[in-house]
Length: 467
Image 1 (cartoon, rainbow, N blue to C red):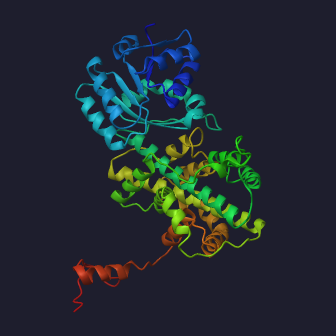
Image 2 (image 1 turned 90 degrees about the horizontal axis):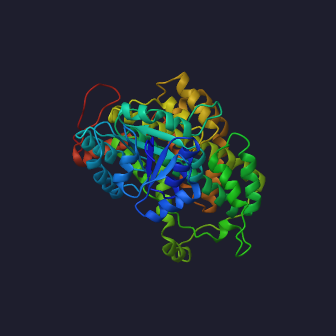
Image 3 (image 1 turned 45 degrees about the vertical axis):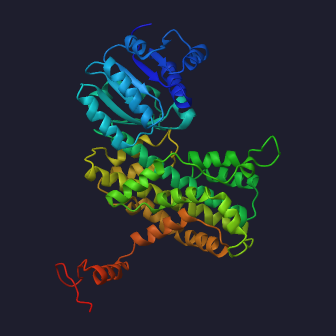
């Protein structure tokens, strides 16, 4: 078949789901996988008159109408470079490569520059929603040449998730690696929220003595109110699920070692590079690293002293952790948005934060009811310095700060680690502090290194003769 409007290269979990989504929406499509058996299996299971398979890159290129649109759904890193290197000699000026993986934004910009020398356009596109999202409607975050986006916009708008108001969860985010940058920050926020939820689960288990089934009912109730979100929803489902082999709750037979693919780490590294505080995200990354030390933790548990958790009133704990989780979610979004805001200055990106919140409202992993309020905040005040200052969130945190502090107190008193919930509170307290002890740090720096300091009572830069 000739005249396909787009090709999907890579038929793994995400690639196959996305290809099915494109096909279901009626776009003529070519599918390709370097292992031919996967291509055959896809065609056998999901073939349609307007879907064809290709078994070489030359065949892929022949089947596409101009400008050719090729969507790479291969692992980030070297596989993307290898695929681009193989495709480049087969393409012509004006053709479009779409990188739909979790590439680092600097790699995307490097590839864009190299392909531009040949007149080929690269659209770096973050896609969130997992397999189900890719199949039924993900949140799509594209960045790169405007002409490339315009050429694929009808397809993206058709396959993207639809927000409650019917808006497709996709928009052009600007030049360069902006699409993959926004996806990177999305994943950093995701890390923080997942860890905060896990900390609440741990507190309810170890201090509230609530079994998973009872916790499931708690999270399900929370999901019907201000905490409504994909991650809270699936947590309720997970905690209600039984392992068929043992009859125990499935969560209790899963080893407590969390893995990661690097996007959370990238967010923290980038934040350090551009000077934005994202402690909730960084603590979530650190918590995963610490969880990986399972053997060391088992040995340390028998040697290091700590308090034995004492049962607390379950109803009081549920109420406190509900507020703490909501506060931590707000802070995670605030830190992510602050980083996105700084990137507009540091990297010259042109997206606006209203649009980012708009396309995160459905389809993606961090979709949540509060994103509508975040969108409203940036609509009303596009130059908002920090999301915490928006009246809605300022009031929400003021109402919950006492129970938020109580949650951290309960955790510390019982020796239960809550790194993200505690770091979120420290960020809140730090941001609202008119005066911080950084004056002493500057004095120390000047003492040992003559690094100078500024004064509160007159302009200029000073050095003190400490001797």
